[in-house]
Picture 1: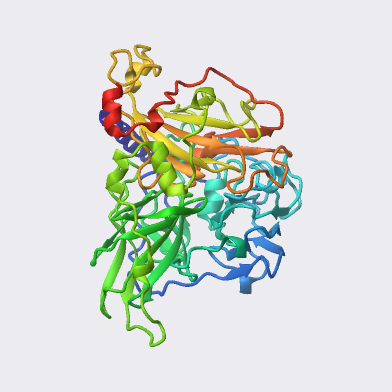
Picture 2: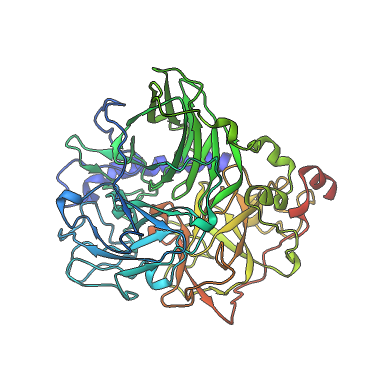
Length: 599
């Protein structure tokens, strides 16, 4: 806690220093007063709940299996923010051609050219699109150096703009967003993002109690100038090192489906919501105000849950998705329920946001609505019981996957240290994005990845191509690690151990099929990764195809400053860059009570 407070003070002191240095480092093409990292001037006061929540434009990839999408716009009449929701069907391949129609010679937001970025020789704004969560080949994955501009200039790993999406995975909601090396944060803040839904095939229909109709919610936070243009820091955290780079972009205005603090009219019935946190860095911890409601969570990043989970709060980090039900059937017309965010910023060491997200207004039920159907929902799991469940049992209860027969003793545990220096962040032993690849992994193999977070802020770690299960997380003493007076090879309770408490399994916001999860400060977070499809026994694609994939922190300011590394699939070889991180294979089967006895 002391280190966390020290970092928060350090970040704020950097912001103060930046303010003092702003005249010499101000973004030259911006005539407005400088905007300092972590100390943005307030956005203009806006009245909440004036505009209705819009339903985003929807395009069927079954009806249009070969689609052209334009970054920024093709036609003004069809341009939208966020982008249209693309709806695919499980097992039906779609091809999307991504085009760049941005004719601005320079970016609308400040580009920090001291970072490693693509820097087109002929100018203009580069883009490349990643369909986050899609099982596709590397040349369709939106590799950071596969960018292209409106003039036809493109990056070193560019192959094509016609991306093929097999949709061979469990039904879920993905999302597409920009992934250009060094400016992802700017392109996403500018609005290059949208939802992508894989609906079930007839052979894998959703349970009868799950509403067929759903509402997509694309949530971002932003800051604005008085004229409505986007406000982004022009003075960095440490301007002497990176003049414009800010460690996190945190806006004071919340947008849902492109509308500031919207309202939605609901009848006394059950509604299904599918939300993606498309923010650069903000973690949303959602709860309701006015009237208390429970979230009945039925799905996460990669699939529906095997059993619903009932929660009073729901944490959704950058890039994470949740699928949940709200039961409004007990409310009366004119009742109002406010969706509220109490997530700390920076997470988890900063002050709570205490900001509104949107409002639900209850109206009279339509005559043909019928009963709410709440009696059909299976009894949800109670998260208060999770701490008494062994991780393997909890994974089985929430995903239906049995890991009890995994040969844990034979699994390689890949340790990835997350650190911060004056120049950059890193997640793999201080390596930069262009350093030699170390994550070379044999297809259909299984590994445990251990994220060791030495930075007093959380990271949200994303692996391309695959899903994973969170196994456990355990706090450690970073000072003892730094001076070499402890080992991760001994369990908590022994004097030589680096750990400061017993491990815990995944919390209610880490269960299910995941492609992104939180790595808490001064914790070791371990995930179980099977480098295979999340549904089929074998890929119909070639995951070894050029240029491969990446893994990275999904706080976009971190990703843009080196917290991203390449990852290659191989049919024959696995590269073991270092010794296996200590992994106690017995621990995954033990409940919290047994852990006390075991140690």
